[in-house]
Each structure stands twice: as structure tokens, then as C-alpha cells.
Image (cartoon, rainbow, N blue to C red):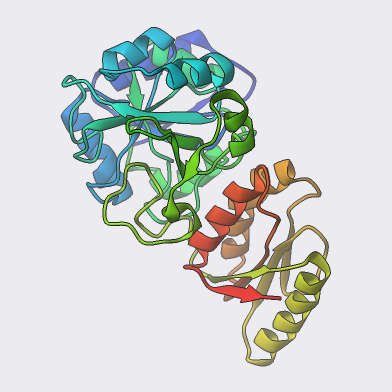
Length: 339
């Protein structure tokens, strides 16, 4: 039996205390953050963390992000906190930024995917912060079945996990829509491991140039230092095709593909920033912020409408566009059409 806890109208401390007790008892609680919904457990409880992997069907070497509510909690998790980490935390926490740092022995290897580093962030959501303060640092990947689109609504979590976890806190729709940006500060040079809700350009304003890991743009890796680097992610049941190139040519190519796939008897869905005549259509919005917020919702909703093919309009890789394109390419299995 899964309890769905309604907090759409705002923070309810009585309900938070109930949820916090569940976390301390080793139970699984899904909760909203500003990015996506997380599937949470006590980060220092090995058995509880193993339940996350079991519930999601997540590979054991795919590390989790630990969520904290106070900078002092970072000192309990990381054995070294470099100057860059302090600068970034001071500027962007709470917010959609995850820092990878050398871990303390107290952090179980199951939480870090067997690595000697730990990924940590402080979410910018009152429910998430209250839940952590009422319990303990919480390990929380996105609250979806492994490999599927991340959840931005409690309904998405219910679809995937009702009856499989103890509680789901419904805090309404998330604001950012893509997961946090992950920066590795455990080695010599700061490195972007996963683009996300905080644009790389903003990070570089604070700490200078940041290397971009090859996995960000699709190169295969044997060792994942952050979620989303090694395995197929964000994929609906339908085949996703991403169309990239100059904007007008992309739109011409989408129209061509719609005709081509429909002539072969496929039901075609399109997700784009302008309307197309297809079997199903999802409007992503005008700005990159709107596109990022709607991205996973579009994949899930088009999938529910039983389309065979989802054609996705590519966007420019600037600001949040880098995170959007990272997710779309992974969702498509790198099935890219150049316009």
C-alpha cells in the first residue's frame, strides 16, 4: 500500500514529520524537488538505499545523489571541500547543482555506486528541504523506473511506483523539469558530468573554465561518476527521433518525416516549439525554460497516446539547451536526423 500525501497547497509540517519518520525507518518516500521528483531513502542506511535500486531496476554501479538541507551536512559526507565547491554552494545552493567530491567513510559504497566520491546537492524546494530537516540526508535518484522519462508530476510517480513504495508526496508540478547539473570537483580540473537545470555558463562565471566530459555528448563510458552517464535514460516506449540543424530546415525535415512515417502506417507524435499536423502533438513552449520544464511531460504524454514514433525538435545547445539536447539524444538512443 502506497500513501499519497497531498501537499499541493503548501508545506504541512504534520505530514512532513510523518514522511520523515518513514525515511528514518528505512522506507522509500518519493518527493518533489525543483527539478524532478526524487525517490528518497536514508543515504547512510545501506539496506534502505538498496531498496531504491531494487524498486527502480537501477544498475548498482549507477551512483545516487545525496540531498542535504544545510551546508554543514556536506562536511559529514565529503572528506574534502575545495574552494570551488564553497564558491558554487554559496552562489547556487539551494538550487539545481550537484557537486561530486571525495566521500567520507560514513557514506556507504552502495550510495555512491561503489565509487570513492559522493554526489551532493541542496534542492530549492520547501517540501524537499523540510523532509531532509525532519530526517537525515536523503539519497534520491529520479522517481521513475530506470531508463524511463523522469517524473515532473506526482501522477508520473504514481504510474511507476504505486504499490511498490511506502509514500509519494504530491507537491504539484516541478519548476525546472530537467535534473540538476553535475560538476566533478574530485579531480584536478572541474568537469561537467551532466548538464542540467543550472546552465554551464553560469557556473563558469564563478569558477572559470569547466571541462565537458565526453559522455555529455554521447561518448560511451565504462565508469559512471554521476547519474545518466553510462546507461540508456529518459526513454518512452515509442521510438524517439531527434531532428537537429538550422531552425527552418529542422521544421521542413519534421514535416517530411511525418509524411514518411505515416505513409508506412505508423502513428506519429511530434514535440516541438511550433504546431505540426501529426497524429498527436505536444507544444513545448517558446523559451528554453519552457522546453526544459515540458520535456519529460511531453515524452510521457505522447507515450500514453500510443504513438509509434515521437519526432522531437532539437534546440540550440546554449544555456538550458545543452541539458535538453543531452536528454533528447539519450531518449532517442542517439537516433539523430540532420536537417
